[in-house]
Image (cartoon, rainbow, N blue to C red; front, side, top):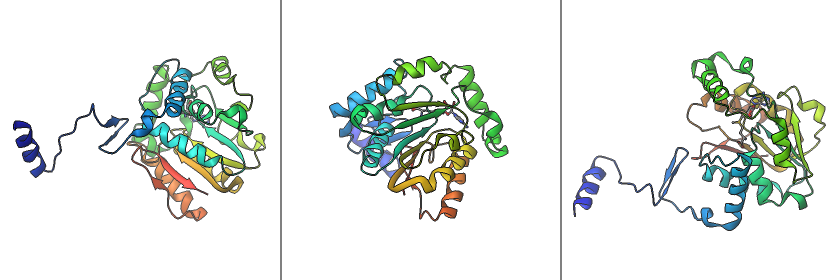
Length: 252
Ligand SMILES: C[S@@+](CC[C@H](N)C(=O)[O-])C[C@H]1O[C@@H](n2cnc3c(N)ncnc32)[C@H](O)[C@@H]1O
């Protein structure tokens, strides 16, 4: 009775009562809608492999990983290699490789990162003003970026076609001789190298290839979205799909 009254009062003021234990409420996303994927054993195994890559740390990003798994599975239907720019401990890429049974996928997965953290000189003045450099410095000080390359190699050791590349995006890209891509995951948390990577790979993406932008719609990452939108206009992309998980999606 009291609950119904409170609900009615809140409803009239434009608010809703929301049981966060019963519905998905994580990583900046609240929804009443079905999250059935969370009970799928293949999803659970993939997510658990991501947590393993992070040495037990669970960032509670299930819906984001669900989107990444869908994107990667869709990309497997078109020819080309997989590329991730911004790997860190390998959470999302490990989940993908587990989900797609990478040993049998017959593709290469290039995993590109400095493995020394973000390159502070790459941030624009606007990103500095938006607190991106401070966030990067804080993350580095907290040890949030993996710098132990042996640990990274050990994580991917079970997959022979996982190619760990230590280098700076975009400078390292031409040396990799990647001719054709099916999947590109951009997760550098910085506008300029993400834009440059998308520009570099655009004509190498197969028809139907999937580009997943981890931070496109994420709170505080507006500069990355602006840079990608600007390039997308030049490339003739109709629109980047903005997702409630904070990600962005382009189908080539
Ligand atoms: C948010 S983390 C990536 C998270 C990862 N995708 C995951 O699944 O957990 C961002 C990573 O981008 C890397 N990075 C940032 N700028 C870079 C650049 N210009 N070149 C290469 N790596 C870079 C950092 O070292 C960091 O490991």
